[in-house]
Every structure is written in structure tokens, then in C-alpha cells.
Image (cartoon, rainbow, N blue to C red; front, side, top):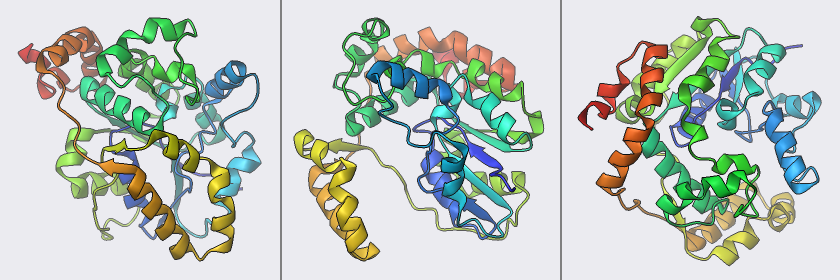
Length: 309
């Protein structure tokens, strides 16, 4: 039986959604829908089940459920998915290797402080974070490790242990310890942001598919804020959209859904992080960036301006 052979494993807010969409347009590549089945992060399944005392999240639990996402995969050379939690997960690397040891792995990284600030904004939008102030959200980590002040909509409490999610070297090592190094590609968000086309071409060549096909590179996943939280909480519920999705033509359904979300949320640039606070965080994360630079053989200290602290 053919098995998916491409896994974009993270990080959040580092271009994974855009890359997933760009690759999905390639005639030789099939990408899953939904983008993030979260099948291989079994440690997170367990954590969530214990926290909620039931299987409240993560609907793809069996291999047959996971493979159903690829039922439309035809003769494309590559089939893949993009679950950003796989990089944080302690189980995912070995689980993916066990499933397909020949798989290609793509890891997308972003400077730690910018990443965390953007991630916090995304969690606020998804209503999985309920502390609006970024600094206060970081300071809540100790309480949250003890099970206190955990928002009711977060799938796993540990997702809000912000300091853990920037341990990039440790996370990447889990993959290069089990996969051949040539099967693991590292992409920096700043490169992707600067030149979508070049990074896309690097990836399709890494996947050994035709590099003459070039999709349109539209902006994906801009920062959004919620205007009406109680209304978004209601329309986010899958039962709200179940019947309309079955009864309405796809274009009509998407138009109605998009119009409603357009009223509830708005796209806007987030207020820049206070420079002094950013510098303070960077000083704390500098040892992690040094570890990552050593692991990858790249001078990320200079690249991400940690040498200016």
C-alpha cells in the first residue's frame, strides 16, 4: 500500500500554510485536506485525553482514519500533510519514521521572539489563549504547568508553555536522529518571506518533482483579530456548518461562511513588540539559538541579530 511520503512538521507561523497551499497546486503533489490531521503526535492525544477526561480533540486516531485523507490520491508522485505540532511532539518523529522511513521531512523555523509573538496572536484569534497581553501570557507559564489558568479551548495545556516551543535544536534532533539527513530540509521563515518562489523551487527539487510548474504566490494566513468573541465561539462550532455544507453548493457555502467570518474578524497588522522587552527575551533565548546554529552549521546569531544584544 502506498503511504504519504511528505511531512511538513512545523513550526506554526513560519509559512507552513502557504507552503502547503503552493505545493497542493503542483500536478505531481497531493496535499491533505485538512492540512493538519495531527495523527502522529500521540503524546498530545494522551495529554489532551487526560486533561479533558475524554477524547475531546484529535479526530484522526487510527491509521485507517488518517489514510482516508488520501483516498483521492491518484498518480501524484508525492503525497503529504502539514501538522505544525509534529515538531513540538516528542512522539511524532519516531511515529512518522515507523509509518514511512523513506518520508521527506520539511521543517520551517522563525526567529524565536517573533515566532512566539505571532503564535500568541494566533492562539488569541483561535481563542485557545485568553490572556491578551503577550508578556503576561509568557509569565503565566509556571501556573499553567501546574494546571492553573488554562483556557477552556486549548487542545493541550502544554501548547501554552511558550518557552518549550522554541527549543528548536532539541526538536530538530528528534528528526535527524531517525531520518537520513538528506531527507530533512530546513527552511527559515525570513528566506520564505523574502522569496516565496525560490524556496518553493528548493522544496520541489528536494521532493524530486518537476520544477517547471510555478503556482501563484498569494499571501496566506495574515494576522487577524476577533471583533466579537462570543459570536466567533458560536460559529466556530462544527455543528453550525454541518448542514449548510451538505445542502449548499460549495461556492455558495464558502461565500456565506467567508462573509460571516468577515464580519466577526478583521485582518490587521499587530502592534510591534516593545524593543526593550524583545531584547530581554532574545537574551534569554540566545543559548537556544547558539545550539541551533551549531546543529545546522549556520550563523543564526548574526542572521537573527542576536549579536547586537
